[in-house]
Image 1 (cartoon, one colour):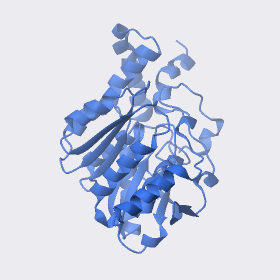
Image 2 (cartoon, helix red, strand yellow; image 1 turned 90 degrees about the horizontal axis):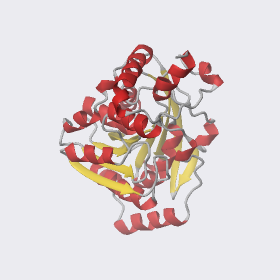
Image 3 (spheres, one colour; image 1 turned 30 degrees about the vertical axis):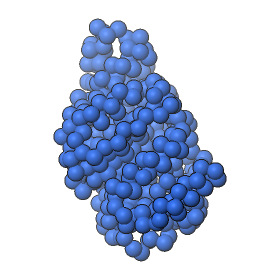
Image 4 (tube, one colour; image 1 turned 180 degrees about the vertical axis):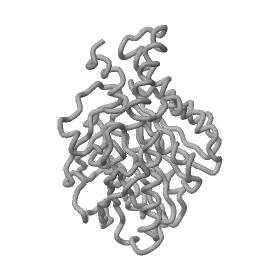
Amino acid sequence: MSQSCTEKLWKPIIRPPRHYYQLKDLGNQITMVIDTVTKRTDFEIVNKRKLTLQCSLFEPVRVQDRQHSCMIYLHGNSSSRVESLTILEYLIPYNIAVCGIDLSGSGHSEGVYISLGYYESQDVQSLIDYLRDHKPYITQIGLWGRSMGSVTAILSASQNEDIKVLVCDSPFSNLTLLCKEIATSGYGVPGCCFNCFFCFVKSKIRKEANFNVDDLNIIQIVGNLSSQISIAFLSANQDQLVNSKHSKYLHCVFKGTKLLKSFDGQHNSKRPNDIMKEVADFVISQLGKQSSDQPQSSRDTKLLLLHNQREKISFQYDEVHPIMTGGQISNNEQNITK
């Protein structure tokens, strides 16, 4: 088998197409989110592997100098911090900051490969350390992830007991199981041949990206998480990439406060407003009343305004490529990797 053919087996898993964007795609540095003046601060951090990562913090100006919470947004496998724009309007008006990050190997950050959460969880810890050192008014930190980002959130929570609130949108329960489902349904690989095929894939990933696919047994990790953590699990009913049963499996074994919401749509579909509202309410209630001290009538009015007069957001989920697409890597890859 030629090198180009074998690359099609493993490379889409750890080197999907990189999402390229311009800083202007993040919006103005000072902007209005509903009725809240919001400031965007761009900054860099260096992770444990000495890779430079690009981040953006969106903060309500009115709480910059007093205690408030922050949700770190963790994007999908072929995406970037631009995706964090999709949750601003649901959290910023309630004094919850949002921090986006280009995880290693994604967006404008350095890194040759992604690892579906394995090394990305280290990126999250580096970001949390930075926020603790440079943003003393941020008191509580939660994680909101989609696809790869949701798995990253779970791994991060298993490594940091200070993380108490997660939103896990379309996580996989086990990477080997996910790859088997994709190989058999999407590529027509017979089930009896999968183990031989995947043995090669795992070996190549270990050699190229230096992690073991078997370590991403997320259902086991979720089952061992502290019951002090709160998690909202989301899934799309027509998801042809990560079947909705994965979220249900994880929800079933998790022992803490939990929410499970499903909706009509696919893996990269725009999330329904009512689902986003319910998840935001869950986050607000779990993070504490210091971030949601407005009267309920005021909150309902703002959410109605959001529904009827949405700000224009340039990023849509369906602009990115999901895992196992087999897409080509941009010729500009060498300008970012390290």
